[in-house]
Amino acid sequence: MTSNAPLSGKTAVITGSNSGIGLGVAREMAKAGANVVLNSFTDREEDHAIAAEIAKEFGVEAKYVAADMSKADDCRRLVADAGACDILINNAGIQHVAPIDEFPTEKWDAIIAINMSSAFHTTAAALPMMRKVGWGRVINIASAHGLTASPYKSAYVAAKHGVVGLTKTTALETAEEPITCNAICPGYVLTPLVEAQIPDTMKEYNMSREEVIKNVMLKRQPSKEFATVEQLGGTAVFLASDSATQITGTTISVDGGWTAL
Image (tube, rainbow, N blue to C red):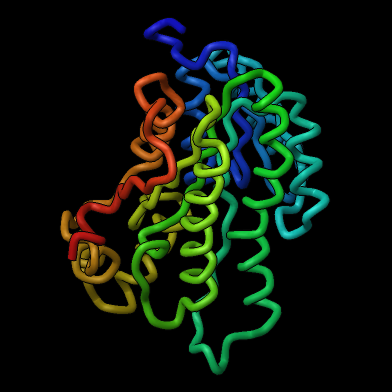
């Protein structure tokens, strides 16, 4: 491994990575020299174009594999179709907000499937591949909501707590092997989806952009600053590095102090 391309020769599979956090993590992985496999449930020209752009920009191999993370067979097929999976990053996720007694059953089932069960299925498919090559990293993108809770987000909070538990179990099952498993727990992250919500929120509360960010969006984030997708990607690169060989079964919070409260 060279210092400018510490992950050269490795292949990283990132679920839910054609936008937002997943894409940011994929770009940082490619920047560190890893070949990357992007994923989402769509199969559009622009999805494959994103992979081509990453390959060209960073001089790595990159491809896009369409697979629906709500389906167990698709989760496992993604890893198989990747061809190699030295670094597995379970990032795919959706959200729905409602009181428990009004929470739609289909939304609960979808969130549990995509946010939690998918990580089980991809990990189950990836571990034999990692064992075969004698090295592996499983990095689960959990959430501050994997460590604490908020009202009206029962499925999301339950799923992310489950991801943290799965992380610990995976780490214990691989503890005597050259494989680690950790979870990154972001707070609020400035993604295109969040960015798009700011103008409407400004109108709703009659606030400036700065006031909306500080007093509405980042009310629970003590730093009053968003985490960035690049910071999350950098954290993932660190967890995949040799420096993190003895870091396993734990969570790293990138939440501006949220879970310190």
